[in-house]
Length: 121
Image 1 (cartoon, one colour):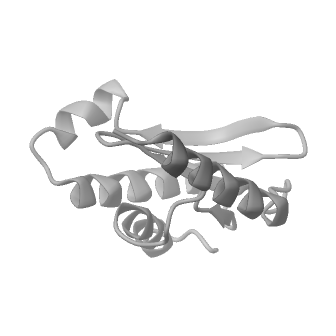
Image 2 (image 1 turned 60 degrees about the horizontal axis):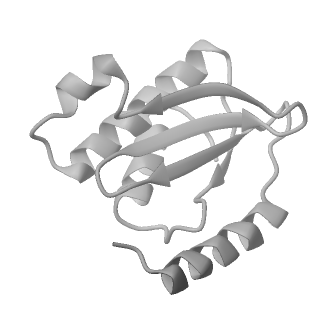
């Protein structure tokens, strides 16, 4: 369980990053959220405040494929899926927002899978 102190530290890091990372129509922001069980990725155009593309482990078609797999493998699959959906909507370049998380583990795996599929950031 996450403590109040840890949550406040995470929110401070998140706010500090969001000041610098802004999505534009040319380069929307790809943000990652991870919980203990699931991982979510969204591509957002901050100028209009709209989510353009999303992928997560709670989607019905993904949930069945992810059962019984390791979290790192699931993050790899979500990264590839978000990249495929972005390329289908002609989004090639994004700004990566790690959302206050350290760039390691599942967050790094998701990012590297998206890069391998053709997203630039």
